[in-house]
Length: 253
Image (cartoon, rainbow, N blue to C red; front, side, top):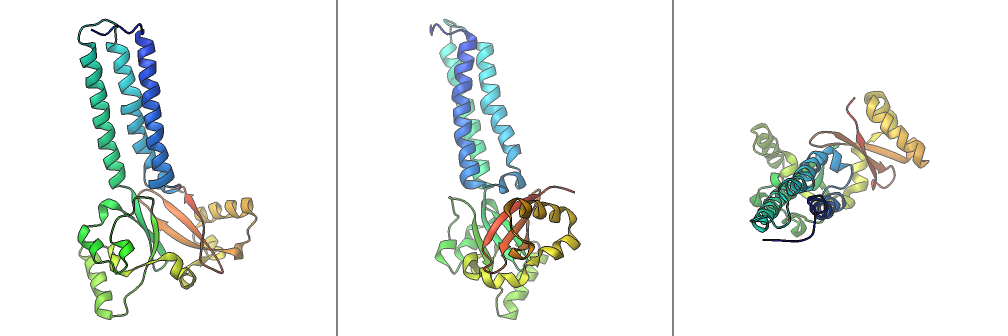
């Protein structure tokens, strides 16, 4: 029998505080490491947060509020079960979030593709020519460029693999090179802002708002599209060096 002197409201409040601290720590890792913005929104991070908050921050303390009574027989066991269920849910949720995290942002010709940890088969990682790409990064997504093979047979193999639904071009780690090494060369496939205005009105509005707030001119940047799970992202690069300037979420039009 547990006699704590706590009322059920105090016990529930303490449970809520502990749960909120844990949830905040998980959210910090998600936003600061695995899902840097705007990838957090574009990859459906808010949905994962709602699940985390619903299970860990809301349901647990509510159950404590209902069952807690100082001196109640079996209270210790009940609280242990609640804690175990919350921990199991947190571990499961964390595993899902970790597996779904973006690991590589791959520039394929004129468009960035987001590659998640769950998409890359271990054998595909082993094919990487660069040792740094033979393991999944855990400290945030890495910018890479897909260097098109010079051999026609290899190029056709990539196309046929995509058509067969086996794996797309961005999954061929053997052709990965660090984006900074090819940033200047990549500029030939980037669009001028003026071209974006003619073709993509919603994207142009987002870019224009950024240019106005940053004091940059149209000619200072160029544009790549990035396809994500739910949204499109406008990737702005320096018009002279190709270095990444900013990534902007493009809302649905």
